[in-house]
Length: 406
Ligand code: SF4
Image (cartoon, rainbow, N blue to C red; front, side):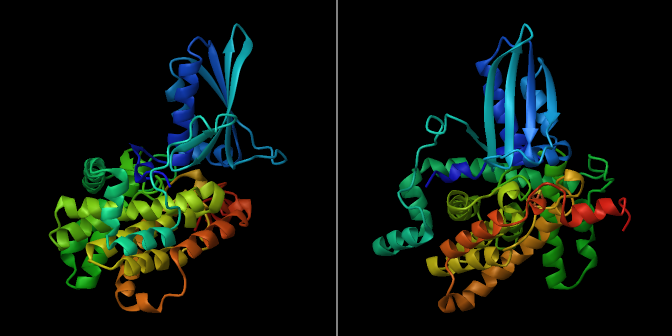
């Protein structure tokens, strides 16, 4: 399994697969073809269907600037694609095509370049590739999951995760301070600030908890929707879940930053396993692969914070993902706003419930994390493509059929 660094990428929203990945591909192509007079970029599949809303064209143009770039949204449905997020980059010099590159944006900001899969493969950091193997390794040696992370990644991993945590906290704070309309034309007003300011008005502890956690999730997700700086966990669209619960419990339990980064380390294992053995791409497997995995990472992080055993941590992560199985990706107008922002808040609360449940029920567990990842993948690849980040099904379709009227 790769390093957990792979799951946490610091960058600008709103989409890891539709902005971060294509921007990375464009930068590589520009560096390889610096003398081109112009570039042409053809987007296929989900990149074409929701690329405008997600800002794929802007991200690609920015990476290829100042050279002129033509963007083509190819919506032909009879083209066989190896991955739903496919793009072709073409360099043009003196009116002739001088180079082409086919790229797959495979989720979480990662790309795969056709014909170069071997050369850009990131080194494996862990020998274990399933949670069953990780659990066995740790239990045999009487070590914790955080010891396991350090053993494989080296102690420098904590410095990296401190950086990640700094950006996550800043995205919460920036999101809570901002107000106004989100870009894209849906006329959605930011809600985090308002939600947070109303906390004082409530006297019910469970409502206060919900308002705080949800306001933090809204804050980060709204920053993402507004092209702000966030951390993928495991993706941009699902970036609000993990910081929300960590920000809340840091304050509630007076945790140190060291406590939090260790929780990030444990969460990273679950995210990386999902990425390796299934997918974290909404275009490939629906929202279960994005917000579902984010929820499992947050539940595992909470298990670490609550001092759970490895078995309890696994149960928390498993429950969190299991109850997102089948969740579709249907962003309205291709924007990472509805249902994405609210969904992050709901998943943050679900992560807390999953972690609480694990305290009592871990001994009764019959489904493993490995099983639920496998199920998520099988469910995802069998899902109708309308529900995999094309904005042609679900809420996106009903909303557009009604002309935006509720
Ligand atoms: S619905 Fe889920 S998977 Fe789809 S764009 Fe929104 S957050 Fe990402």
